[in-house]
Amino acid sequence: MGLTVLPDLVRLRGSVHGTAACRRRRRKRRAAGDRAMATFCRRTGDSLFLARRISGFLRTIAAQRAMAARAVKVHDGLRVLAAMLNMSASVDQVLQWNVFTRERFLAAWVVLFALAGL
Image 1 (cartoon, one colour):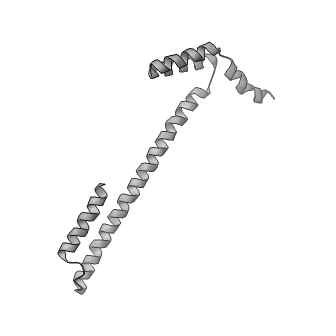
Image 2 (cartoon, rainbow, N blue to C red):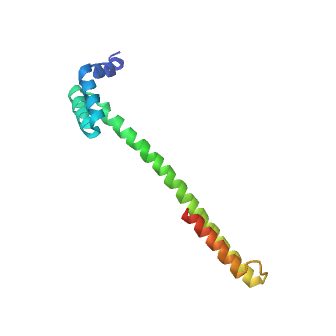
Image 3 (cartoon, helix red, strand yellow):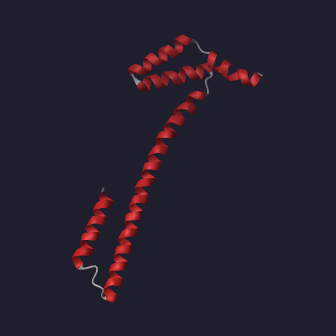
């Protein structure tokens, strides 16, 4: 029973006016408001302030990491296609099929590296 009441006690220790003052300062200047909120929360014993700030920061990092991972996968896929094109052109030259002419090969390379640049 004591453990279930503890978060409510921690939340209710501070006054309502102190939190509203912190919100007003935050609207004016975000950095000053964050410092004021951290000071207020430290005085009132709200240990979840840093956890909330860190979780928001980690969410933005996770989104950026996912976007970077997609970009790396696309770039690696284009590199594999370029290597495949190079090897098939070599096979074409050895077996004298004349499927990959010089112009087609260069055009395919230009297209692949233009896609990699996007």
